[in-house]
Length: 115
Image (tube, rainbow, N blue to C red; front, side):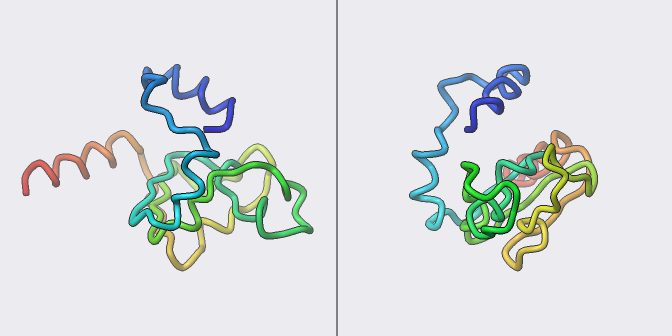
């Protein structure tokens, strides 16, 4: 995870031992069937890797756009800190789920437990 994300996850009581560093996950992301992005914008924006004209080009990101399918959970269509639209959100392999991420993930987990 990018450094500032560690702080946010710590505030959410996510144990540090469960985190995987971006440099460790990125080489394997193309083999991931489903990536779930919760609330992130700039740290998963493929423009940082793919668009030399983007002001965030060269910024380290998690390559969620390279997963086979990416579900992006957001409260709304707002931009990240950079103010840029995120191409991940309209990529052919991405699906947007708007609403409360905790309720959405809890609902998905409950469906798996019931099956």
